Every structure is written in C-alpha cells, then in structure tokens.
Image (tube, rainbow, N blue to C red):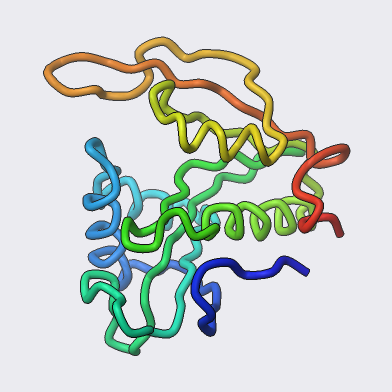
Length: 180
C-alpha cells in the first residue's frame, strides 16, 4: 500500500465534479504559466474521463487558496483518458503550496493502480521539455522518453514549446509501491 507523503494529515481521493472547477482552475492558474482553461476541465468531465482530486484535512499554515467549504484542502488533482490497453495522463497538478512533498508521486501510484485495474498495459503522457522537475519525477518513476512533439505547448508571445512524450510499461515497471 502506498505511504502518503507530506505533512501527516488525513487524505482522500474524491471525484472531480463541475462544482469543483472554480477551485481546480484557481490551483491550475497558480501552478502554470499556461494553465488549462475551465473548458478543458469541463470537456474532460463531460467526456467521462477519470478526474480525481487529492484532498487533505486542513493543517496550520495551509494557504486559504486551496481550502474548501468542507474544511479540506485541495492538494492536487489529475485527469486521465483511458484507451484500448492504455491510459493517457492529461493533467497532473499539485497545488503550489503543497509541491515537493511527494504528492505527485502519490497520485501517480494511485493512477498506476487504477490503470492496471482497468487492464491497461501502458501509461502515456506529455511534459514540457523545459519542465526539468516533472521530467525527473517521471524518469525516476520509470517512464521512458519515446518521442518529441514539436511546438505542442504554448510558450507565450506566439512561441511554442516541444513536448517530451513518455510512456510507462505497466506490465513490467513502475513504482514498487504501486505493484499489485
């Protein structure tokens, strides 16, 4: 069973709903220079893609930006797209105030377990070529670079940035914690 990282707190996964989109979008805008729009999230939910939030009890020092009416804090979220024998990770985000505490890896563990449970053999993602921290996380997790999508991401002032395409063979690799 994966151990949860970060400060000791009660945590839970909850399905993302349209009622959560304002809070999710606030985290997205705080986390990225080129965030997903609310329409991206809405369309993903409408398509029935798995979208979950990682929620934790509020602790002293938590930023009010991620506090919810139920008293829990939005630590992060992910959106994935299942396919035939594969899952494509579309978005994984940790709220800036909770980054570098292991929550992204924790969410990856959960996604790997879920994907394997769906019979998926591969997990795919794209990551900005300049996002060294995320690339280190994915490489450390066992993902391999398999390609490059030229000009995939907006980069401001009419520029574009390449995306590194990465995959994880769910049948032979992944986090030791995520093994069934």
